[in-house]
Length: 494
Ligand code: NAD
Image (cartoon, rainbow, N blue to C red; front, top):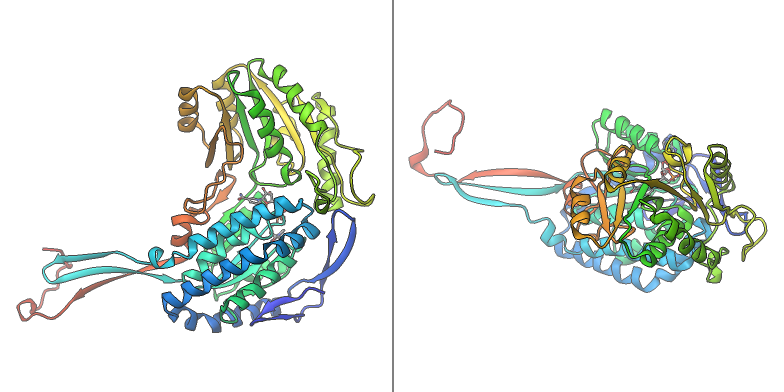
């Protein structure tokens, strides 16, 4: 059984509930994971709280050295982590290495903590008075992550939180929990003091325990929109700082002048990579004019060459994460037919290079999807790519802007003026121009608009540093005999 990681060691915990962990390419249970009770939450928070003061006092140079060591170990051993991810999530090994690389980017950003935690100084704001600000850690912070990026999403947050002097409790998805324990052991090897990186496995009980615990100062959440909203509302009602990133439905607007080979490659990569289980996956192609007619054969030709199967066998696309999720996604194909869309490629019953009991669904392409259909309106989170046809650029922009989500989007065109207008008019947080998955690099911040993010802080970059610190502003005057005397007026800067 996989236990929690508390005070520097794996611990079975106090609660007796467990959940099965599957290998989705084999369709078998490989282990059980502990599900925390309230007592386990209390034990995890107590351990983190006890470790926090010494870590917050640890000199920046020593913290920096530990972060560099963690980066080196991660880089050396990323193959082991990729295998763990593939065995529990199902994504192919190359893709697992890709998510680790994007997480490592944030570790590298956090290695510059000496620069990030500098604060400001103003001299002589009033006669003999100086002001400076000190970015200070918050204390114990919680990270609650989804199944689809068991390494990268936690790494959007914990390198910066730890660099800033906080104690982190990670509550990973119970569907693929092992990566978190591997990362915890790596931190220990890198020299991080016990208690500064805790892993608490569990479900709603663990999440609610963190959201309401008086000793947890902040919550970083990533997951589906209904839970993100719940986490934001519950956490803030309990006085916490909360950033809660939610679901998505990302559109790719294709203009008739676009390079259609690039568009077809991009649609395949962004639609079916990781079996569509990415919050930045492209799930809708919005085709302007009659460009869909020329684009369709280019996409179907490429789909025919995709190898679906066990992620350890060099395939292009793996299984879905659970049988239940696979069935839910497949159900959208029936919905599409019932709603009058045209299923161009049906991924059900596909031949796979993998075990018969795996949670398989092949790449699926659906044309002429009505925008009233649940296939268009809901996040499917699987290898189902829809095409919606619109008459004009303006119709496409309006369609995207009226959607509930605002995570990512992309325009494909060779017209710089159209691309510029798109960037300015589109109501979405992350925008690509001939780039299908515009995930910002770690020096910028990641996050969507509308139902894709609750709170005002995005992940990593400057906003990540701000989220995991609070400023103390210090106004200083060294005594000068000429400034004595009583004055009950409000201090001004004369
Ligand atoms: P999920 O919302 O089911 O679970 C996310 C986390 O919340 C998990 O740790 C889970 O244990 C916990 N949780 C689940 N139900 C809960 C409940 N009722 N109360 C309290 N906690 C609960 O999401 P998922 O299926 O693991 O991940 C897929 C979703 O995450 C998709 O919607 C995807 O778009 C989204 N996602 C968003 C981003 C982003 O950056 N916006 C990134 C990755 C994934």
